[in-house]
Length: 284
Ligand SMILES: Nc1ncnc2c1ncn2[C@@H]1O[C@H](COP(=O)(O)OP(=O)(O)OP(=O)(O)O)[C@@H](O)[C@H]1O
Ligand SMILES: [Mg+2]
Image 1: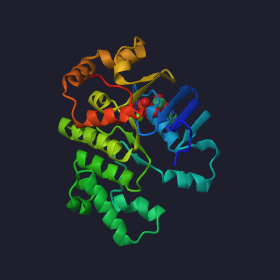
Image 2: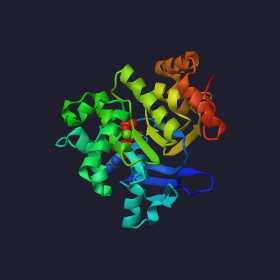
Image 3: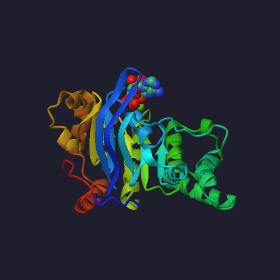
């Protein structure tokens, strides 16, 4: 478990990343707290996916440090890295499922790699995770190419959850989905955090998702985090790199919708969380 005193689950300090002459990060600092839904936003090419890849050890920054679940990534040995990887789940933007395996086999794969469970139990757990994300059991027998975009996202989420992670990374969980499927994903993300206290780090351009679901948001621009706070706080920030997200027609529409919405179960649950100190206020 995370044993940092202030319950910081991810801590990024002064991270610098460059590709040749192209400087992507020039001193990124941020921290993600336990049980919050933390969003990373920024323009295309601002380095969001690169930062995510660095957090999950697919890439190393040129300098700076990253701690995840209390472990400094730059100092991990091979076994420690393998042990740490089991403690998080990743939902990749395009699903990342293997086309030659059924959905059930895909979901079971992390258990086959990391546990000694027998096949029958793996299939049973995979089936359970599948239904937990709102898919029917029968979908387990299908291949990824037979699924719709929304079903693929759910199946990918089921796989990310299969080892009961403490931390979940989501790369664009609603991109390309119709509004109904997108709002089902919104609800699912909230439910996961509220029921199991998961910490969630997501990259998204989806303003509805940001207003409805996120506790805190970091805005990445010009190589650095320009601001970190609730959507309410960011929406009144005068920094041009931040205003750009709120001033377009889509930004205003999402904000108007948030202010009109009755605050139902999601927000009630968030309010409960806020009392425990993990969730800053949202617009009422
Ligand atoms: N392996 C690589 N080699 C060279 N340049 C790279 C590599 N990976 C990323 N980049 C560059 O780094 C910059 C940041 O890329 P990144 O994918 O992190 O952006 P992003 O913020 O996720 O953008 P988007 O919103 O479009 O997904 C881009 O200019 C990209 O071209
Ligand atoms: Mg990206």
